[in-house]
Every structure is written in structure tokens, then in C-alpha cells.
Image (cartoon, rainbow, N blue to C red; front, side, top):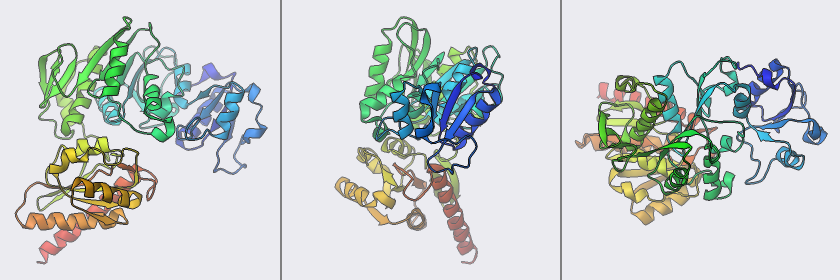
Length: 457
């Protein structure tokens, strides 16, 4: 657990008592800080529980608001409204970490897609580092010495968290990409972009910035940051070879136009998007003065629910990409496979299935389920993509598997059943992890039944 001795004389109101909230309470109490707590779904018998209307807001040094609780859009939580009225800073646990560890070296990684994989890959390459933020342990549960000089923290940072970290100064800031997401929480796309930009230090403050430039929004950020002579700005591209930056094209990694490695042997991180994640990790290692070991990248197993291999039977491969909660992620997954039986569904994002026709050639059939089924059926019909509708993920998966095995029986090769939903999971599941685990269980049962049918055939 991180020591928060620097905050021992302060008082905080912790709202939201899930994992990060509980870790925050433990760390603050251990430091000697005064702590009050609240959660909309928790009984008032919890120690130090106090209702928002009973709080002495003038005595608080900060409201520690769980990332999932809004302070602006779609409507601010009642504690956020009171905090703003009393000029109480709205923070998150990562900001407390930054305040408590002034001598630490922070690498911040954000982006609409790829940030978890990039952060985990860097932690694999830098086992002495501490990993946290939007991945792994709550940051205040990390075992680290807050007084240690240059202790290295790798922080995956969501747009929700970036809005609440005024004290965080990342020496290396990575922004992989920026495409529309979480618009309900940020009001509109520009609000989302502004949240991402909070990773970068003010004009004139030194910082190494590594930024993908293949999307319009992130390219505009890059152009703006290049005007700041205090910053070292390194562009990344997966579309063209950069003479001043890091590129990856056709599986080859380039540094300032010079070939440095072939990524074709990296089998667990498939697709152009994952190769760009590798290029970002390469750029960070270089910025830290560390060597980039390709053999270690090859050994990296990847993360669950991100194009995760589940089963292979009779020329049919089952892939769990439950983390694909928007169409951009789904398109990237589709680009890795052919003859795909695609599982889509959940609660649709504002972008729906826009641009799915770009990968139409890869889709043998789509199977839509859940809350988005009707909307997706209409979109797929307009795009001329064959599809079927189902109520649940289980029904859709069983039908997709049946069709895939029939295709294999007809002699087809390299068939893929891909769960890449392009939706959030909250209509039928707690989160994308629960959805992915459910898919894997369904697939294991299907494959076992298939093996039984073959052995008794």
C-alpha cells in the first residue's frame, strides 16, 4: 500500500466504495488523514459514512470521486454539485498518488483503444515498474515507497480519470489514438478530446510526448504540441513511414525511416492496431533509455478479452474480443481475420456500426443480440451484410458456431467465430469481463459437445 504521509493533515470525502474507493479509504486512514465516505448503494452503518447534506464542505481538501460517477455530463452527482459550490477540488485516487510521490517518474498512457495492451506490454518489458490506473490493482494498493527517487509508475489513464488529476505530471505522455467514445460523459466529441489533452503538461513545461497521428483529432493535438519547444514530441503512424517518428507498416517497425525490427513473429498481438501498440512501447522504452527486446514482446501473452484465443476445432477458431466496446475496435479486430462469423450486441454507442462496410469482405455472417439487436439489424440490412437476430449472447454464439462448423464441413479453411460486440455490456452483463468470461464458457461447452459428437459419429 502506498504511504500518503504527505496528506496526513488533510480531510477527504470519498464517494464510491468499489475497489478503488475502498483502497483510497484504507490508504488515507493509514496515513492519518481525516476520511468521510458515501456511496449511493451502501448502508449508513459503514464506518465514517456521512450524507452529502451533512458534510462540512468548508473543511474538506478534496472530493475523491469514483471514475464511474459523473461530475458534469450527463448530470453531475449531488456530491460534485456541492463540491463545486464550495470550491472543493474533485480528484481521483491517481491524483493522491501523484501528490504522495513527488519523486516518482510517471509514464501516462491514454487513447480510445489500445491503452491497456500497451501498458501491460510495457510492464512486461519493465518488470521493475509499478502498473496501475485503469488496469490492475487500484493505484493506492500498489506496494511502493512514496519517498523513493525515480520509482517508475506506468499508468493507464481513461478520459474519466484524466479529468481529476490536476497534480499528475507525467514525464512521458502517450496518446495512442482519439476517436469518438464516452460522449455521454463528456457532452460531445470535443469534450472527450479535451479530457484526453489533460495528460499533457501546460505550454512551456518539459515533457516527452508520444502520440499517434493517424486519426484527425490526435493529429490536431500533435500539431498543437509541436509548437511547444519545451516538449519532445514523437509521432507514431501505422499508415506511413515517418522520417521523424516511429512507424509500423506491413509488420516492420521503423525508427525515423530506418527499419529496426520485424514484428511478423509476434503471434499473440495480431493486427495493425496491436503493431502500433508495440511501436508505442518501443518509443517509451527509447525515451526511458532502455533497450527494446523483441524476444520479450514475442513472449508477451496479451490481455484477456482483447482478441483472446479461446478454442480451435475443425478449422474453426473462437476469439474473445469482448473489450471491443466501440466500432473502431471491432473494425481493427475484423482486419485480422477472414471468413468471420461476427457476434455484435449489447448497448450501442452513438457511432453504431458506422464504417463496418470497410471490412464487409471479412464477414461471412453477423449475429446480433441484446439491446442493440434491432438497431444493428437495420444498419446491417442497409450495408448488405447477412445477419440473424437473437436475444442473448448464448443463443447467438450457438448459432454462429453451428454455421461455422457447417462451413468447415464443406471444406472451408480458417473460419473464425469472433465476439467483437462494438457495444458496452450493461444490458446483460456487469462489464465486458463478465461478458467475455460468459462467451468463453459457452464456447468450451460447444467445443466439448462437438468433440463428443465426432467421437461417437
